[in-house]
Length: 87
Image (cartoon, rainbow, N blue to C red; front, side, top):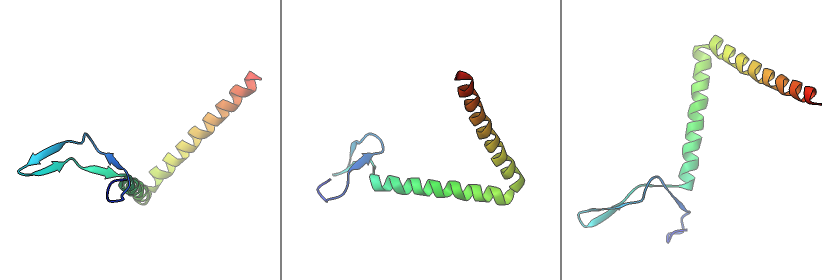
């Protein structure tokens, strides 16, 4: 906690004081709550892009989802086959 009762600060880079006339300017910092907001905004952007992709090119999106499903299924079958052969 700082002297104003706010949460801990996370540095974005090196914290350097720079003198600008008589006023001291420090590098920007990012609070832990700001990090959560950035993660939420990025997550919403990813979801919006996926929805846009489905609207613009539904065939391509469906094929990609099928390919991912096939990849996961093949991987699971390979792991099962490995442990079956092991025992």
